Amino acid sequence: MILEIRDVGRKTPGDGRLEITEATFRRLSMEQELRATVDDVKASALLERMPCTCRAGEGKAHAHWFVRSDAFRHLVPGETCVLELTSPGRLTAARPHPLAP
Ligand SMILES: [Zn+2]
Image (cartoon, rainbow, N blue to C red; front, side, top):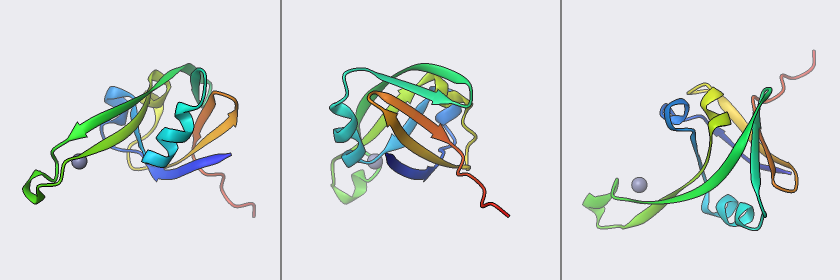
């Protein structure tokens, strides 16, 4: 089940946080235990909700949603990544497959 297709943030290799939508956050909240895989790296994963003030000037309090794993430190900033739930509690983040010639 593909959850999201998004660009990897520049901070992701440093903190292992991959930003996700609230809908994905809620979906993953139903899983018992999360593990993430990037290439051949596997690590536990957890969900984080972070209150934010990036639009403070607009007077709009909101949150950002993340799934965090040491495996995500291997993602490359700016690259597109497909976040997929492959079996219960098992996440993979991978580059999109190139189109077959
Ligand atoms: Zn914000």
